[in-house]
Image 1 (cartoon, one colour):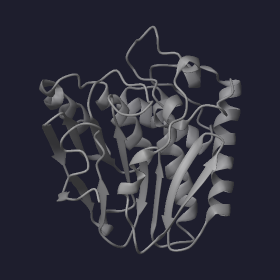
Image 2 (cartoon, helix red, strand yellow; image 1 turned 180 degrees about the vertical axis):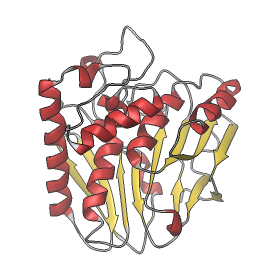
Image 3 (spheres, rainbow, N blue to C red; image 1 turned 90 degrees about the horizontal axis):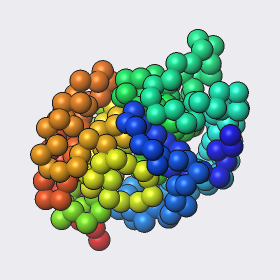
Length: 271
């Protein structure tokens, strides 16, 4: 089964919850990343690298388009090849066990899915951001790779990551302050009200901080499925807090906000 025409944010959102209409062939088409104007890193050079439907926004101290494109192509090819011989890896809604000699990116996706109780493809965007980021980090001391809301961050400086939460009054008003000493780190946002990604929940934003972007992506997907009303925020926090490797979580539903873990807020503007 070919994934070449599916955005990472579409094919990642198979989850551990059963849903008869969860079809990868019926998911909506690619949409532009309209929230990117809130990501400001004036000390870095920012550029986009688009490979098929993978759309990465990258900030570094130097332009690395060629190296980034090569890395993204390589990791997409690995995933495609594995799916061609293991089609269930693409479609399963539950954790998937892979061989001990499976490619590292496949193992990472499977392990993240297992921890988060979701399918491995729930972590694809974070996996591409993480593995590309690890390769590019040898060429730049400052690096931010954002792949549809899934971020690999490696920095010696403190960085602020804005939170886009759709129509919530909190959207664009707050951000997360990430200390350089705490990177590299993975940061992932899932939403049931914004964008084209499939979610069984209705959270305006669920932001997960984790030891890597693969795990952050999987947990954000799983956590986002739990939030239908503000009353679901506590169980969402309990779910994320129970997973080894998760460092913090923020949940926004309308005017309500819940947070747990190593989360430091900063007020920001949208100008």
